[in-house]
Each structure stands twice: as C-alpha cells, then as structure tokens.
Length: 337
Ligand code: DAU
Image 1 (spheres, rainbow, N blue to C red):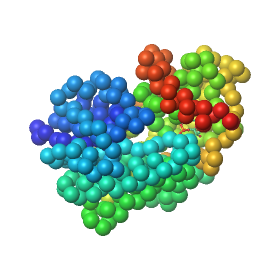
Image 2: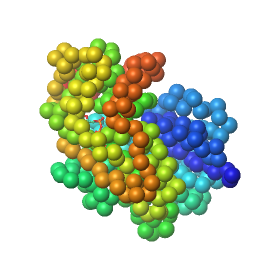
Image 3: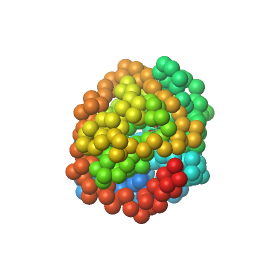
C-alpha cells in the first residue's frame, strides 16, 4: 500500500473537517496535513476525534500566504484539496473584502504552489451559488456562471482561475460545486444550525422575506465522500456538481425544525427584511458525479433528525461559539431587521 499525503486547506471548518475525519477513519494509506488560518468558523474541536492519529498534521496559516502553503506541503504532497474559504453570503454583503483575499487571492496562491511543487491533483471545493438564481430546471456543469452575491462572485473568481490554469499550464485541477450542506459541526450562522440552536435556546428564528426561497440539501458526509471520489476518479479540467435533489423551501425547513424541537410557529418565527439580492432558487443536476460512481447515502429526513439530535446533545460545542464575535455579528446582522 503506497502512503499518500493530502494537504487539506480549511480542514478545521465544517465540510473540511468532515472530509478529514472521513479520510483518516476510512483510508489507512492517506496522511493528511490540515492548513487552516483559524478564522472565526474554524474549530479544533471539529477534528478532536482524529487529531492524535500519527497520520494527522496541523499547520496554522493562510492560503493567501505562499510561505504557509509551502510549510504545509513540506517535502511534497500528492494532492491539495481547497476547502479554505469565506463562505457566508450575509457576511459577504456586510464586508466583501475578506472574501476576495481568501477565495480569489488564496486560490491563486494555491495554484502557483501546485505548479511549483508539481502536485499531482488540485481540487477546488466550490458551490452551486456560482450559477446564480435558477428560475427553472437544473444547473449542469456547463451552465453559465452568473454569481449574484459578493460571496458567489469570489467563489466564481476562484473557479475561473482554476480552469484557466488547466487551459494555460495543464495544471491537474478538478472543481466540485456542492449544494447547501447540513450536518454536525456547522457554525451556527447558516440556516439550519442557526435555527436549531436558536430554537433549543428558546429564541426566535429570523425567516428572510416570504421564506419561499428554495435550496437543495446534501448531508455533509455525502458531500465529503463526493469530494474524495472526484479527487480520485474525476477527469482533470472538469467540474462536478454534488447535489441530492432534495429541494425544500425555507418555510418547509423551518416547519420541520419546529416539530423536531417541539417549538410553536407563532411564538418562534419572525419574518424579517429579506437578504439583499437574495437568490430565490438553486437546483443542481448531479448526474455527472453520479455517473462517476458517487451516490449520496443519507436520506434528508433522517439526516435532519440526526442533525437536530446532535445539536441537542452537543451544547458544549455550540454554546461557547454563540458569544463574543458571534454575538457582535448577530447584532449587526439581525438587530435592525
Ligand atoms: O448553496 C451552497 C451554499 O449554501 C454555500 O456555498 C454557502 O457557503 C452556504 O452559506 C449556503 O448559502 P445560502 O445563502 O443558501 O445559505 P444560508 O444558510 O445562509 O441560507 C439558506 C437560506 O435560508 C437562504 O434562502 C437564506 C435563508 N435564511 C438564512 C439565514 C442565515 C433565512 O431565512 N434566515 C437566516 O437567518
């Protein structure tokens, strides 16, 4: 069995840490180096179960810093999987600059490192948001990129560089574009963990506008498994959508979360001013990744129930997060709405 070294950037975040836990538990031949800047959503507790594994190594650093990237690569690596990103749309509306630095400049720095070190594979973890609002039908990988938020535009900027490096230098790149992801260890600023933790605390939940926006949900373990599968089996230069065809309106999600937490609609739901430029619908065609052999395993209903139970049992994980920086952000984001 040949030992392989994968550098995982952003490996202390939500999807990155699920990927790291999965790879170290299921793949004895892989060594992992996590490169993470430890910004607000990173959490060492997310990898506590695997951090003592001798195949795990951690380097603190920013992907936009070439020296930090070189430290993570060390004597060399077989693949870089880039999860490091600023990812929250609402934060990008308040403050877009950090998104450009990490999602655009950071991606460029990684691509240069891939060339310098002759890394065999670079996988860019991207998002269905680059396709923009989808009025009808499903987005295939060749759909035009029409981002509509500063976040989505920064991710699209990263994707375009990745594809340009393939065309220009023959860099062995892959891109995955995932849909809305849910599951354990998700920082409670996104819809599901924000609503679940608010409901468990007895607080209200802020539904943007009419709540009829549609998102397509994939469980984080399925998303992580899809990324590993594309990394190993995908064709360089290609994009692969990772979605499950689980469309739900935000009101449907809210209703189910109220049921699972035993809370009442009237007392708990607050309709607030809509997000600026809010995309109404995302919908992915994931048949290309499925033809490659990826098959999501977690049914949405089961996954959602298990996620709510996880947050109920892991207050020690999320309560400390919902103070300090988080409180200041929450005030800034929601107080005036
Ligand atoms: O589609 C993939 C994308 O999904 C990822 O690339 C992003 O990183 C991730 O943040 C997510 O983007 P969304 O903007 O769709 O996720 P968010 O959880 O922020 O919002 C989901 C929906 O819920 C959206 O229609 C806005 C709505 N919402 C969200 C929050 C935080 C509310 O109604 N109230 C809220 O407080």
